Each structure stands twice: as C-alpha cells, then as structure tokens.
Image: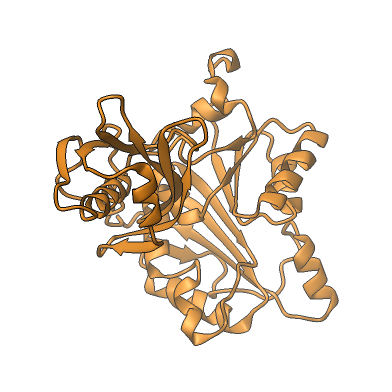
Length: 339
C-alpha cells in the first residue's frame, strides 16, 4: 500500500484505541502488509526499539498504560529513525479484543509483567486462562508467545495457565528455562540479573487447535441523546448532584463530578465508564435548549465511542435528572433498549 493513501490520523506513532476502527486493518496503519509483533508493557522501550531494529520487515506494535513511557518510546523511535513502530496507550486485553481480528498477531512479547503477588490481587494479573484464550483467537498458527518474569510464584502461575491451555505448545521441552543468552534484554532484566535474581523465560507456540472466539467486537450505535422536560433550572439540577456509581453485571458507570459550562447554557458530568473490554472517561452534558427543554447528550471532548456502556451511562443520567421532579418527562430519545 502506498503510504500517501494512509488516513492522516494514523501517521502519528501513537494511536488512540477509541479513534481506530474496530477491528483494525494493520496494513492500513503501517502502510504495508507485514507480520505483526506486539509487546505488552514496553516500559523504557529498549526492548521494543531493538526488536524493531532487528526486524525491519515486521510491523511492531507497543502497548503501554504509562504516558511518560509512551513519550519516551516515541522519542527513542524517532531518534533511531524507525518507521515500523506504532504505540497505543491502552490495556492489552482491550487492544487484542477490539482492534485485533482473528490470526492477525504473529508474536506477542510480555516482559516482566506486574506479578501482583498478594493472593487478593491475583485477579489483576494479566496472564490467566481467559487472557490466553483471547490471545489464541488473535494469534496466527505457529505464532509465538514470549514471556519473561523474575518472580518465581508468578512463573509457576504462568506455567499452570499455559499447561492448562490446549492452544499453545512449549518450544523448550519444559514450561520455562532460567537462562536465555540469545534474547534481547530489557533494562529491568539486566538489573535483575546483576542483582542475582533468577529470571524465567517462556517460549510457547500457537498450535492448530481452534479456540472458541466469544470475544465479540463491541457494536457501536448512533450517538445517543435524550430530550426531556423538567421544571428545574440548571442551577437547581447542579445543586442536587452527588457523585454516584451505577452498575450492571457487565458495565460500571461512575459519575465523578459536575461542572457548569462557561459561555454555554449547560452542565457537564465527568464520567468513567468501564465495560468489557474497554474503559472510557468522558463528559456527559445537560444542555438547555432555546425551546426550554433539555438535551442530555455526549460532549464531544475526547471523541467518545458510542458503545452500549455509553448508552447505559446516558440512561442513568436521564433517570437521575427525571427523578429530581415529579413533572419531568422524556420527549424523545435514541438510547439502546438493552445495554
């Protein structure tokens, strides 16, 4: 593909999970057809940069939550003159689930993930049975999953997960090895080795066994809105607001705070929405129209994705406002019937 045909939004090395198509055609993003290698949590990006330098014929995707790490990675990639790297600030599960179609990943690298050592925190560990099933649905046959950790209990946990999975086979003759002089090393890894800590290395290959793909891409709906009538002013609505959390089995909506919009006859509600597999922080708006009624809608800040969770959030806000007065009523709405 000619790079001049690439959507201008994707020319930056850092991409937004909410701006990209679900799923994403990675040949569009990189401007060429090539194998896709993904590193989860690239930290100081040393491993990622060397991976890209050693594999100029591959497309390299780095996933990271830390904004300072993303900025550092961008600087390093630019200094190295690399054009085969892209970054996304998002959790691995969300990227694999929403952006990656079946069999699109050729290799996945997970270097020294947080072991969450306390028993109460095990559920926060990245690597578990469900995650490996997700990886199996997104990885090509004979694709590689490469993991390293310096935490023995987490190594045993990873071993158990991989051995329970029927979608991967070890390339080592054992679940892991404790020495791998041929691999690219991370800065953290060199520090661990210098301090005498043992590192555990996993190299497993995707086999041909079919993995059930129940990781359905979230379906988008039209931008939601509700028009209501209520005999209250914006000031009266604002005075009655309190932070609140609404939830269903699959979705959590946390309305954190409310602000008066300066120069516009509206209120905005700072809202955090968590729904499998993505999270969005956005603004919901209550705007008084010239007709005297109110429009409850999404603020354009942050380019929110109109997922089922977003529709649920607007539904919750509408219910809260309508419950403020017995004469409130909904005139029209475009909300999904089920969220």
